[in-house]
Length: 337
Ligand code: NAD
Ligand code: UFG
Image (cartoon, rainbow, N blue to C red; front, side, top):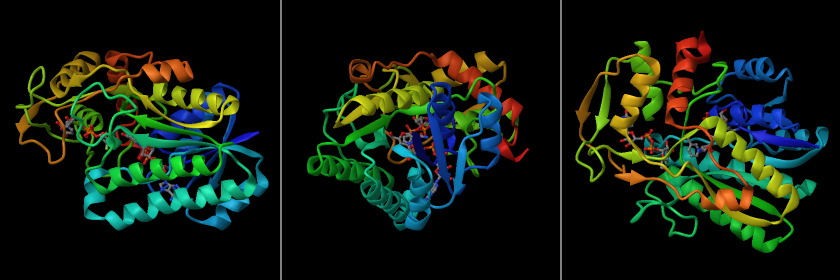
C-alpha cells in the first residue's frame, strides 16, 4: 500500500519522504516543481537507497490525480502541496486561494472517489492568528491575519466538516511551528527562491556570503532581549511526526489538530548566536523596524502530540543550526549547483 505525498519534493515533503521510506512505507510523490527541483528525487535515493515513485504534475488537475490513484495502490495521503509565503499571499491572494484551496478540494474529491479515508494536512501555527497567550494549545481560538493563513484556517474547517459527514475518515491537521535544519547528510534542505523571507535561510545565506547582513525585525518586543521569539523545530523531527500521524490514521478514525513544535521559544538574537557558535561563521546584523504582522512570541504546548501520537521533538537548537549550515555549506546555491 502506498502513501501519496503531494509536494513531496519540497522542503518538508522531501524530509518526510525520507522518513517514510526509513519506516518501511512506500511514498509516491506528486509535485509540479513550482517551488522545488527534480534533483531532490536523486538526493532522496542517495540517502535511502530507494527511488520514490514520482508523478510530475499539478494537484489541481483531476486527470493527473486520477491517473495516480488508478496506477498506484494509494491508501493514505499527506498533502503538502501549496504556496506558503505570507507576504506574497497579501499581494496575490487569488493565486493563493486558487492553488491552496483548489488543490485540496480536487484531491479530496479524488480520495472520495477511490475510497481513500486517511488524510494528513499541512496546517500551520498561523491558524492561531495573533495569540493572546502562549504556549499555544490546540483548543485555543483560531483566526487569520493574511490570505495564506486564511487558506490554512478554511481548509482545517473544510476537513472538520468532511469528517462530520463521514466518521469513517482519519484526518490529521498538523500545525507546524517553525521548521528549520536539514537532513544531516547535507543532501536535502531548504532552498527558497529569491531572497528568503524566513530567518534561518536568511542567516545561512549571510554566512555563505550570498547576502551581506541580516536585518533583525524589531528589538522592542516584550521578550527576553526584545526580538521575536519562535518555536523552531528540526525538519527531521517534523518529518517523523508525519510518520506517527500516518500510523495514527492506520489505527484510528477522527479529525484531530496537533501542534508539531518543541515547546521551547528562542529569540532572533539567540538564534543568531547559536548559529554563529554552531557554524563558526559570523552573522553581521542590523536592527530594523518591526515587520508587519509579526507577533512578539509564539511557541506551542506539544503535549497532545506526545499523548495522541507518541511523538516528541528530539533535536535541540544546536543540531538545527549545525544541520542548516551543513546543508548551506554543501549546497551554496541550493539545488542549482
Ligand atoms: P515547499 O514550497 O518547499 O513545498 C511545497 C511543494 O509543493 C513544492 O515542491 C512545490 O513545487 C509543490 N507544489 C506547490 N503547488 C503545487 C501544485 N498545485 N501541484 C503540485 N505540486 C505543488 O514548502 P514547505 O516548506 O515544504 O511546506 C509544505 C507545506 O507545509 C505547505 O503546505 C506549507 O504551507 C506548510 N507549512 C510550511 C511551513 C514552513 O515554515 N515551511 C510552516 C507551516 C506550514
Ligand atoms: N526575522 C528577522 N529577520 C528576517 C526574517 C525573520 O528578524 O530576515 C524574525 C521575524 O521577525 C520573527 C522570526 O525572525 O521574529 C521568525 O521569522 P520567520 O519569517 O522565519 O517565521 P515566522 O514565525 O514569521 O513565520 C512562520 C512561517 C509562516 C507562518 C508563520 C506563523 O514561515 O508560514 O510562521 O505561524 F505563517
